[in-house]
Length: 53
Image 1 (tube, rainbow, N blue to C red):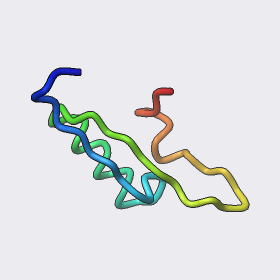
Image 2 (image 1 turned 90 degrees about the vertical axis):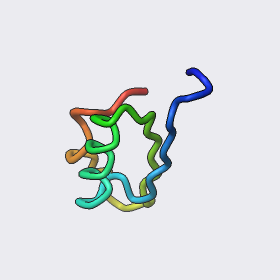
Image 3 (image 1 turned 90 degrees about the horizontal axis):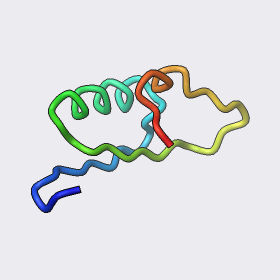
Image 4 (image 1 turned 30 degrees about the vertical axis):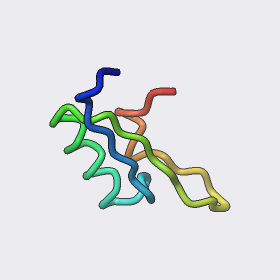
């Protein structure tokens, strides 16, 4: 990562708005990190196509 890289932290990344925002920022060249709410069901379907560990 260079000093000019833009980084975003999205809370609620697995939600509708968070997943759209993550995809938008990735297309703009951002490095995106996300936090999801602890829930009874682990549903990351909206971000599976952009997820990296």
